[in-house]
Length: 234
Image (tube, rainbow, N blue to C red; front, side, top):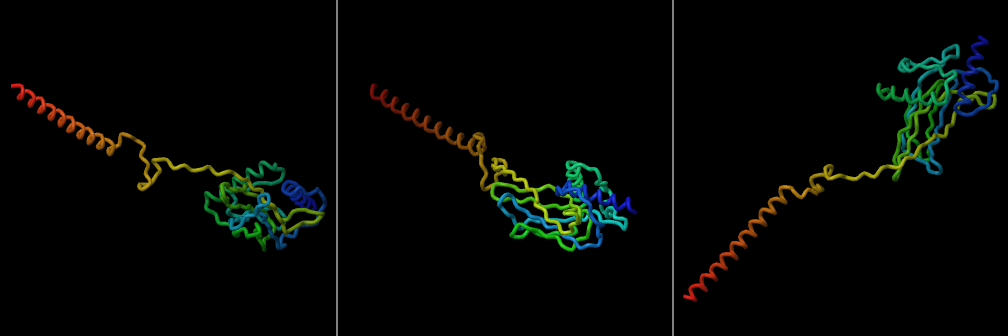
C-alpha cells in the first residue's frame, strides 16, 4: 500500500511539473471524492473573448487504489501518463480529440466563455479531462487553441489543489482575403471576360451585315451616278 501511494505521488508530481511547473515536494493522500473545478481564462494579450464554446470531456477517474481508470467510451485511447514527454502529451491530446470527433462523442460539460473571458466547470471529481475550445474569428484574424489534457488535482505548496485555473494558450492567424473568381460568381453578378461569347459573336455578325449593306448601297449609288454621266455624254 505504501508503494502504491508513492506511485500516485510520483504520477501527480509528474503532471504538476509538466503542466504547471510546480516544485517536486511531498504531499498527502488524494481525496478521490473531493469536489473539484477547472477555470479557463481565455485571453489573447489584452483582448478577452466571449461567446466561445468550451467543452469538457471526462476521460478517466480514480479507482479505490488511486489508479487511473479510463471510462468505457475511451478504452481505445487508454494510455499511461507516467514518463510521457510534453510533446507526446500534446500529440495524445490531439489523438483523443480526433477520436472524439470521429465517434461523435458528447462532452460531459459544455458552456460559453463569458464576457470576462472565463469559463468555469464546477462540481467535478478528480481524474483526467480533455478540454476543447472552438476557434473564433474576430476582425481579420482567427483565434484557436489546441486540445488540452488536464489532471485533477495538482500538487502545489505541499498540498493537492482541486480547484484549477488555467490560462489558455491561444494562437492567432491572419485570415486570407477571399477573392471571388468569375466561375464562382452568381448569375446576377456573373463576370464574363471571354470575348468569344455568343452575345459578342452575334454583335459582330450584325455589324458585318450592316457594313455589307452600307457598302452595297454606296456601290449602287456610284454605279447610278456613272450611268447618268454616260447618258449625258451620248
